[in-house]
Image (cartoon, rainbow, N blue to C red; front, side, top):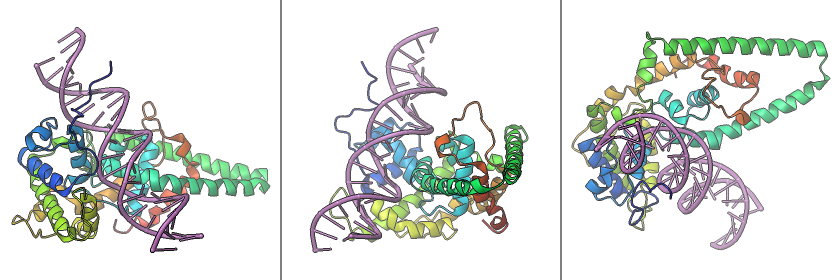
Length: 312
DNA sequence: AAGTGGTCCAACCGCCAATCC
DNA sequence: TGGATTGGCGGTTGGACCACT
């Protein structure tokens, strides 16, 4: 006999969420806070499984989520962290507080894997061409590569030591709050900020209601996708004034989540993070098939060292 | 304009660990 | 203490969208 389903499958709705459902969920969480997901479907009347509710909240409705348009910086951080941590998306996401693990995972699977594969192909071609090199040249470049690798491993270890040390650097304590405790945010920030999300939701919904929504199954995806521009504007520090909400909590939101300041701390983090070392060696199982020769990755990642000097 | 194949992403599934009782 | 329940995570999938023919 198998494990019982997490929720009663009969009468449980599946598939894309409608704006109505989103609003119900956000309203509920606004009042009660995230957590106790089991109770959410019964308390709200949503015909959704508790898991689905939690997922919808954490991946989509939770305040402060930035969607789409990964910056080059974020991209490189993901590659870096993936090399360090493997496919531990939740852990990786904790270093990119505006991104969800699902988002990062998707981005990795759709964009970065391909990108790295491309790079790898390029590398292989390059190596084939390099067959004509003299052995001296080869040994020199390999020596350089090994030195770089050693340095990287050393830096990675150092970063790990710093991270694990009781006197963590500030950026760590600032950036790490979301590891595995998504539901443990301070109630004030979470609930207050979700007002903005629902306001955005409503705004987008109203704006797009006539455009594409024909059936009751119209999803929020459309409206939210349309809000992308506004959303990104918001995350850039230009708060959206909600049409349908008398409460404007954008400022609170920004100050509470400090995304603008994250931008700078993020670059600190990048500098602190060392490249592809053997961090978490004992527990991480990096996707080796997706790994590239370090030198190539390094080139791509560390090229950024030049551009990184500027603002995030 | 219609068909087709590829891409992207939200959501689902199943497993596991933590927590509850 | 141990079984039941819940929450979290990573892998996978389905379908909408887009580009190309």
